[in-house]
Amino acid sequence: MSELFPYWRFFAFPIGQVLVALLVGGYLLRRSKETRSYLQWSIGISVITAAVFAGLALGWLYVEVLNTYSFGALIVLIAPALPLAVIVLMSTLSFCACVLWGSRQDRFVTRLGFLTGPSKSLVRLSGGALAFAGTIGVYLLLPFIHLLPYSSLTSDNRSSQITLMGYRFSGQFEPVISLQTIQWPEYNPSFRLKLDWRGRAILDVWHKGTTTEPETTATYYLPFRESAYRLDNGILVAIEK
Image (cartoon, rainbow, N blue to C red; front, side, top):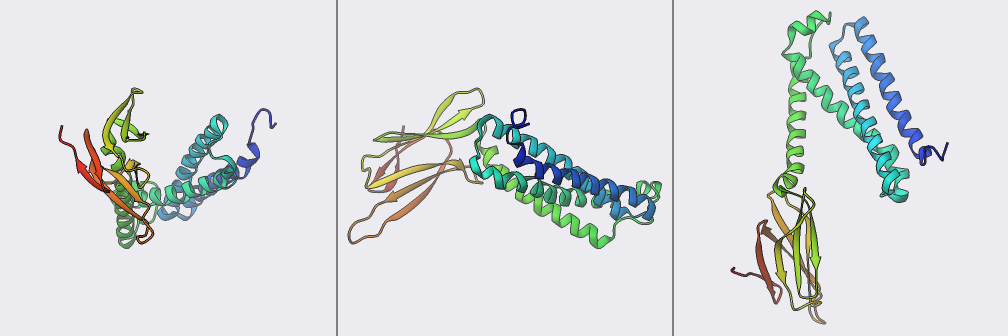
């Protein structure tokens, strides 16, 4: 079996988590018909939805490990934690969505035979939770949106110049920000390979210090556009083109 499905032993327990979630969700759906509880129906739908997403995430992880084994020995911890995290997160979001939807669908609630829909306090709590989750999601997505039309960043480091380059979806690298530095290793600059939420490139400049001065690190936030700079005693100076 190990020849047909390598690394299967790391995924046996996570697959069990997904199956248990499916069984629990199915049981709650059946029970909701007897108890006529919209709340129970919402939880069942949410758990099943979360289990489907967890299964997809687990499939992605397996393919990633099978092709590159990029996580190394950490797969022992990642494989069980990934479906659990997805199930908790997605079931919570799905439940909140069901609550908000049910609060505006009185006909649907009564047509299925439920006694009552979600309470107003639960609706307000679910709305707040979704608004908070949406804010966090937008905050996490903004760096990738600002990065377009590039898919990722890379840095070309040379003795006297560092260039932050963007990688296009077409497979081409393009220089974006260049930095001239002639005081290495006294000043060691490096670009972070991600933008901040405001779409700015981040440059860290490390100064090794002296016998009387401690090591320091200065951080600069640069507009993400084609530009050139130089380091002048650790101070960033723009070069006019």
